[in-house]
Image (tube, rainbow, N blue to C red; front, side, top):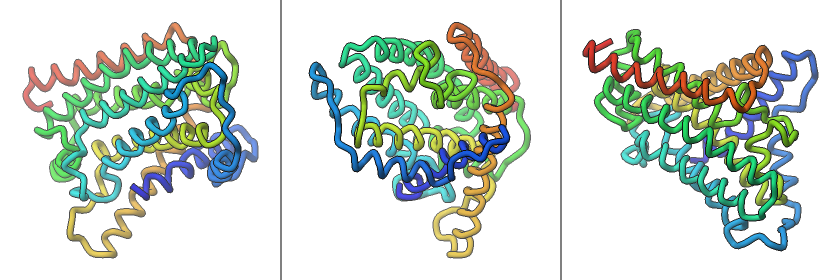
Length: 304
């Protein structure tokens, strides 16, 4: 739990730095998100007069649910203390609960930006969650379980290329981009009311409340990268009882995966542009169809 909490802001800073360098800019330092969080925690909270208790409690609920979900994903070792709870369906449920709380809190103050952002977020979630569930079904049919430690151990032992898993990987990448409000679904660096989705829901937050939400967003990005690395690239994962040197090698392998994913994300956001909001359902429809085809292919072929 401490590893993902300490690493999440660094992932955000590394992605911003790589994206800036690809655009021939210097960019902010990698550790700038830590400074931003410290600055926000030291600021006072400004609350709207018509906001209720839900608006004040929501940042803590969002952060708690996202942190627990991120901590359940095996990063460098399988079979951790709470690995029995590391179920993919449970993780999807935790993320869905955090999304619901954030959307309701955005509607609480009654601003137009909050309403626009919440409606767009729910529209995206209504298409992304079924695609995520189909990816879970595809992986569960291959590994015989929805528990991440079991899936990672199975993938590490069997390996091999499967058409259904390739479809699930592409679908999961699309869902990860949509869930984390990244290009081409949303631009995380914009503040234009015409285009923003996630930023529109957090415009009314400040101080420690905004810090909790920003940290939860970084944890969510790390969560999806960890899920992709755990299921489809499980090399370097160790089991319980390994020695200290094995732990160091496994941790280095995990950091390498996170760095590679950050570079790929920065490259993707540099070479493509943000699509229109009304075209996002088409992209998420592709993810849903890929997940569905992967599941059907396993039923029909029995092993592809």
